[in-house]
Image (cartoon, rainbow, N blue to C red; front, top):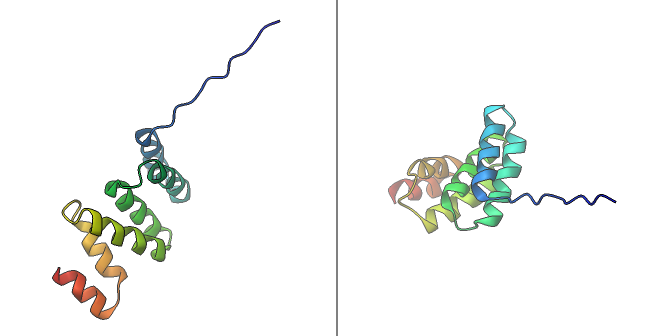
Amino acid sequence: MKTTKKKKTIVTVDSLLEQGNKALNKLQPELAKQFYSRALQLSPNDTSIMDGLADISIQLGDTEHALELLKQSTNQSPENNPIKWLFLAQLLNGNEALITYNI
């Protein structure tokens, strides 16, 4: 009798981001969002992943989720990826946007 061993697939943050980027290159943002979301679950304080997931969410029209991610990212790491401040200001209205611009 032959026994078959199942190979364990090790999922890493880097492999998930790689798959997410491949999906983006193939114009599949919904699939990319799934990979980025899983990567963020594995590395919940990584602001680069938050910023990437926010960008994907904006592309998909999920501005509420993008706003949540950008606020969290700017609070945790305001110096990294300065473009997130522009995205954040664009998602806010009126005085909120002005306050973000002046920070």
